[in-house]
Image (cartoon, rainbow over all chains, first blue to last red; front, side, top):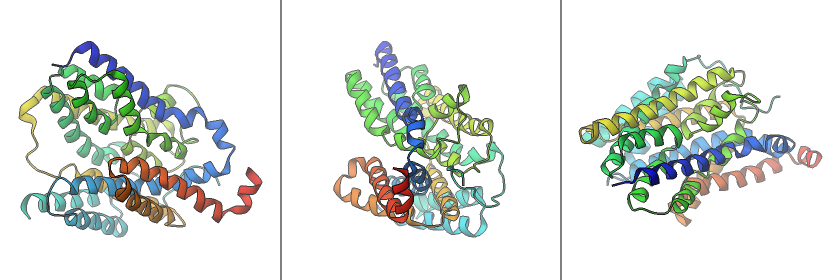
Length: 107
Length: 236
């Protein structure tokens, strides 16, 4: 049984830590904006972080089954090609996820 | 050139609801699993919902369940949260001038800056008004709390029958990667990120995402200062 008062204290601590991390760059906005390197990092990071989130999410999914990373590679490739050619985000995501679910459950 | 994220050229505008639909497809099932596991571990359902409202950080919420059930000290759980969520320190760098300068919308947008919300917000055009940014963030927040509530309330009946539905979050990230790629002059961030992840997977697989982001930041600093040596000297 999880004690309610302990859980409330843990929730408060985790909320504070998470919010502090998310707020840190904004607290230092003025200082950061004086440095051109930070501005260019702001341009550089979204594509890098997005790429990492794809790879990390796919790697995590690949660890849930024993078939190797092929299902993930095929599904991500389908999403990328669809998005690149058709540029319809919902279509890319729906088709990619449907193919992945089919591979995972029926292949 | 403003310092914000570039405008994706002529992407068809989506309603905030359509924009967050893929996130809903991921957040609702993942939230259900969180609420379910929390209740199974002996926690009250309302505490699971409270956690999703206030902590609002998926991986660390999953992590807290066994730690809470094992009765670990608050300091230990807070430290683990710091490690798991440390990557969020870098997210604001891309959004510094996108959020309103002050007020409750600013505070809320910062509070709600999850992986998925970061991904959507940095892909929206730089001219997007703060209210729309906040609406997107709030919808994502709502999907997560909704999923957690269903999981906490329905309990044992809420097991997912189809494996792999949460892959739509990976698909969403892939879509946003393509859009980011399209809007950049150079795909270098993508290659640097892939290289960083490959290195980290070999050296320290248990904190792969955080370390790969940190390595990409270093790679970005190095690559950018090589690409723009003159402005760098003038600025610093």
